[in-house]
Image 1: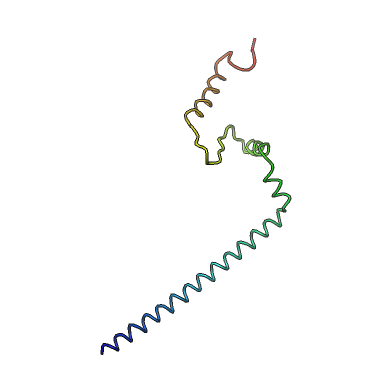
Image 2 (image 1 turned 45 degrees about the vertical axis):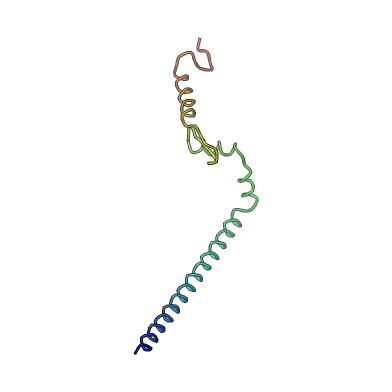
Length: 113
């Protein structure tokens, strides 16, 4: 009677192991197919845009960033690479200081005589 219980337990464990193995194989196959799709999509995008265009975008520099920001009608921006800390108090004071000075009569770059 004890051996029958052990046999039943062993067959249940074998069935569970077989199920998990098949499930893992399916998940692996799905991941491989998704990776192949992403690689094909990336290659297609690069071929559509062209390597020269991508190179030009990467090396365009700050002038194109300024034009892009102007095209988006942004008045001021703060762009950082995320590695350098920014003192927002002094940054805000600098921006506010320029705004306040611009609104004070006689404190501009031009003389209005």
